[in-house]
Image: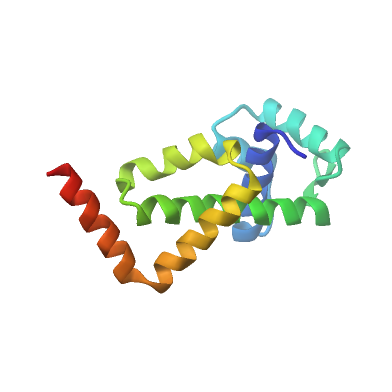
Length: 139
């Protein structure tokens, strides 16, 4: 299983490939706000561990394993953003909050949060009731 740092790189590489069709070291460095040399080291490690194939000066592609994990990591991130939005977290805080918690939850917890998000999407009136009860507590 990848470390949290490896997950950040895999997720970003997956997103870049999904949106641009490719991921270069410079793009990854810019997206993660790190030095290109740090990206090169991590990309080499991800290559060694079988998450991607990297050829110096030629680029990189995710392996099937890396693609599968990348897809799950993007799903986890998006799901947590939806969850925090549903429970009323201020939009200004959502991204940073997700970045702070996403690596600390088990996949079992992510699955249960996914169930809860689906429930509230299917039953928006229940979300409204929840928000009203919280507003009453604040009064």
